[in-house]
Image (cartoon, rainbow, N blue to C red; front, side):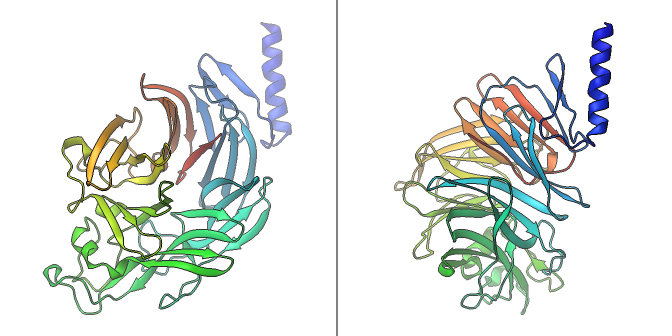
Length: 392
């Protein structure tokens, strides 16, 4: 007993002397619960069974006073942290041509689009394995889009000086259907996607050119109101479909996922919402989804189905297999997350029988076995993380 008491005293003393900044934290084991003694004001760990040996967990916390980047191991034990400004989001890891890169978004401050909730504009930073900045990325002014800042929601690094990003751009469209009673001069937050290679814009897509989206909007769509900028789409994820190299995008405020031709910009199909090209029934409908990805060699569409507080206040993971030619759903899986409702943001990744789920605004991340419903790891975050991601 005396030895145990002495050990605990030494651990506490060590924690104090090092100012909470050790790179190799000490884990205090108490049954199945672990508490990280380093930066425990930012996160702690529970339900740890070490089931994903060798993985790396990434998240960025915005504390409103300082932005923090965290790299942790498969147990949630801190590997590296870095303070970067006051509003940081979306820490990601990339591996191309044998090079490892990290990227994150940093807000440049106040939002110009009438302070639309959920939209943050700034710049993306590309880093080495020590999180030292190698390059920064801004939006390229091109054609009629005179923008320099990108949006936080998505950034895809394809190679050195080759990337896909997005921004929101205030436009006054003249193609809103008359049935929606648009006022002359009404402003919308148009979603712009841009692919840049070696400083040259090779693809740009402007959602405002597609009038069919206006009638599908579920939020921020009172187009007779001239006092605000209407975020009627809210683009929150983009991925490259590995089966054909086209783009799959998620529009939160449509409850819809859309596939775009990466050469022409044409709409190839729409899934979800009130104009789905794929007939849906029952549980196949989703609400305010995030982090849409193609996995399993492009055969499976997976995403976080957030839900909606007044309609369905619990969150799910959905998997679809689609026959894109016949426009039918070949296979569908649904998994209700055994944790708090994720109202905003979030992410999901699949590894064997496990999902790694970033809880977004609910301030947690979990690794869960979807067959047994057992939570294998839980990070308790004291500030929200737009995404929390795990990499092998």
